[in-house]
Length: 331
Ligand code: BTN
Image 1: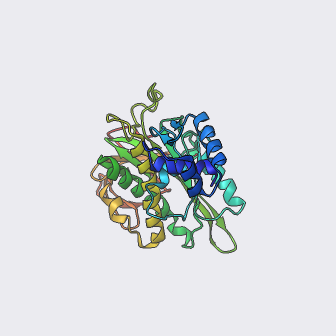
Image 2 (image 1 turned 60 degrees about the vertical axis):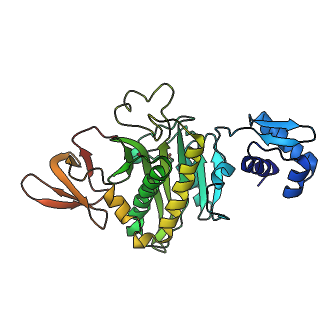
Image 3 (image 1 turned 120 degrees about the horizontal axis):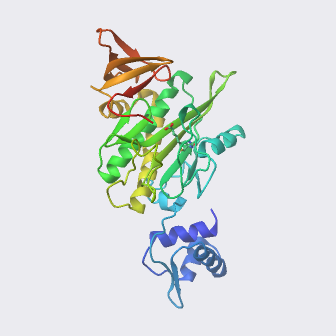
């Protein structure tokens, strides 16, 4: 970590309080001059640090910027299993992390951005990721379980997001089979898991769940085509930077707790109980074919149980078909 990151972290932990340059230098084992240079550089970046002779430095308020230290404060004590890189802007956290994975980057590296210029969604679609409205993150996994169980990565991520939002905001979320998180009938989070299969070991060389969460509605609103179908965590309530940071930290912590016991599926009930589709009239889409059905429960293998009007029943496997609720259009 650079002196700048460390200085910022200490000031953030003591927001509103003055800390002398000498004390900072002692704590961080650097010179007072190095502290001064770090503060100057932070000020130039727009960080609200006040410097007063004989008193020291004081961070008067949190900036809106997403930083590693603003997340770390919400991780369990002493947590250091992740290497986190935070970007103001990036092409796509999944694309960049994939390149890093190919170069041998170890498990636990996490990329987080406030803007993506080439955010990707499922089925080659683009994922709307403008600056200052959402958080986009990707996590590098090197799983030892069988590739057949890789669907659990996506479902675990969906529950981690749903739980994190509920925990921090108290708002009730739903999960639309198989990997979208919804609030008040609209999508607020999409998940794209990408993986590379190693032919020799017959295992996954790596897997990258990429999560995009709409935190607040853009000042000019969503593009026309998205307006009826997407929403954001803070839609209709006061936006709160600290809560946003906490949600991101909770998503990571909760996901990783699930991942450590992934094959036991500790997130299964959390997934089933939030099923958006249960009891709804849906269209089951298989290639060009579209059949009306009623969605039932999600089974213990994350298959969606559906009943057709002629009484026939089926357990749908994710990836084979897509399902759209009849009541509203889906993204
Ligand atoms: C979808 O809803 O189709 C999936 C969207 C996944 C978006 C996330 S944002 C972080 C990561 N980087 C990307 O380019 N995509 C995923």
